[in-house]
Amino acid sequence: MRQVPTPLVVGVDEQSMARAVATLHAGNLVALPTETVYGLGADAANVTAVKRVFQAKGRPENHPLIVHIAGAELLPKWAVDIPLGAVRLAEAFWPGPLTLILQKHPSVPTAVTGGRDTIALRVPDHPVALTLLEAFGGGVAAPSANRFGQVSPTTAEAVVEELGDTVDLVVDGGPCAIGVESTIVEFAPSDEGDVVTILRPGAVSAEAVEEVLGFTVSRTATGPSRAPGMLASHYAPRTPVETCDADAFHAAFQHLRAQHLRVGVIAQQALVCPEATCLWHADGDINRYAHGLYGWLRDADRHNLDVVLAVLPQPDGVGVAIRDRLMRAANG
Ligand code: TXA
Ligand code: MG
Picture 1: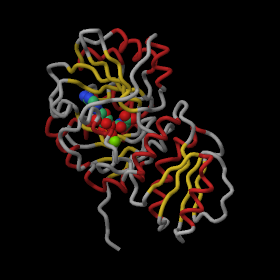
Picture 2 (picture 1 turned 180 degrees about the vertical axis):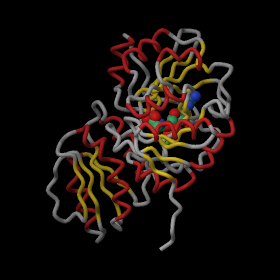
Picture 3 (picture 1 turned 90 degrees about the horizontal axis):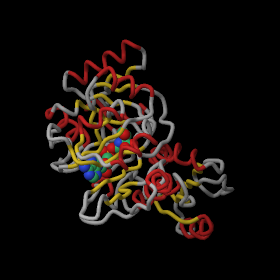
């Protein structure tokens, strides 16, 4: 078997944290846990380090990164003309799975923002990420720690599987609690005031955002590559993925079996499906569905399946994000 060079994986003890901070200061790459997915982190102020992130991921350089900061009080260092609504969302949801797109501060290198004059900012709700950010002192640019277009990693093992030793250090903080990427909310200035758009659904629902803002927001991003991670095909395992709604499951499954395919099934409910080669389910719990999803898609690749049939959850809460990721995986 081919030996894949592995990066250094460390725990979350004080010495490991110090090592991670030193690695960032040296302009090298650190994969770190957040509550959503693992991030591939670099010093956001170091253009060379940021360029290495794009190389490691195989990501086009015009796809902007999210800058992670230790607290909302640091917003003015990274963004200008911050709307009151954005401050309200930060107060309501940070630390947490919400990313704000704001006008960038002139000091932020455009390498981080993919050449744009806007910046994505987030305070992650993970003790390890927060400890690292506080000790580091600066912003950490961190996209999900996967190869471009692939499934985001929710464990340290998955990071190693994705990136090998193109990452210098992996901090193993255990599995990510939520399991799907943050909700991205864009504030775009216009003549009639700010236009607020959900660019990517996540664990913070559009309804929760609207409740804090006091007005309705747009749920459909338009225009070319508004959020480049929102390509029609993304989050895709090697195994082809098909989706269906719960009430169409049996018909969809039988259709695949009639073609003598080895079918893996992913579902929220504990389905009874003895003919499935593999079955992953969340015991009815939507949060467990989000938590398990990316690990199941990775697992599917290990089982030599012909196809994964994923049952879409109801479009409520984090279910909107799960549907979004599954439909993009199905376009892979
Ligand atoms: O939960 C998350 O957000 C994870 C963890 C690591 O924090 N990060 C993550 O990063 O998902 P990434 O790079 O895989 O996705 C970032 C998304 C991309 O779709 C990117 O296009 C969008 O954020 N984005 C970043 N800056 C933007 C900007 N200035 N305007 C529009 N979209 C932006
Ligand atoms: Mg990503």
